[in-house]
View 1 (tube, chains in turn orange, yellow):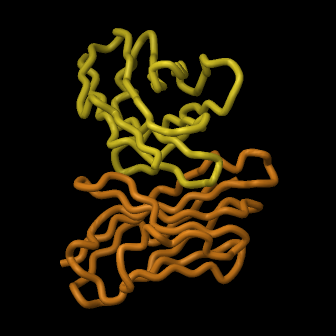
View 2 (cartoon, rainbow over the protein chains, first blue to last red; view 1 turned 180 degrees about the vertical axis):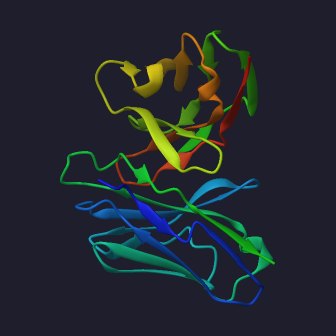
Length: 116
Length: 112
């Protein structure tokens, strides 16, 4: 399996622009997670989905952030408008209930976002 | 709420020396515990995990960790460190509800 795929790997944008980060989970996985990593706050869970349905979005910092999962193989995290404080590495992870290993999350390589 | 503490932000060891990275957790029930490693510019790779059973778990790359309930600890060990082990290491806990909580990480540097 190719693992969790994220795109783009790097994104540089200007304040106020819309940013869309993309994630393809491991095939067959039914949980998908979005994390943000910063020096100040470490790794934070933003939101997670089960069977394409958002289950907990309490970590989403504010209304400028939104996430969708239109199907089992694709998810997006959108920031609109972006601000410099959104600069971070955003990770996507997935796990599988049906493999009997729900709690083991497999991470993608991350998207490094820089907002100027 | 669950929490994870990694007391050492940076650790430097000589190549070939033994390694122990500390992890303490706070959680009311039996936790599920993980160690991940992150190389520069890379995602997180799972090293090992503890769900139940034997409290000494073996992982990839020669790592092992021991769950000690009485000390609320899950320390990571390796008997002989290789230069390629230089990376950042994260301990994490979940309550079987899919909410992973990570520690702040320990950055390992390996001296030749």
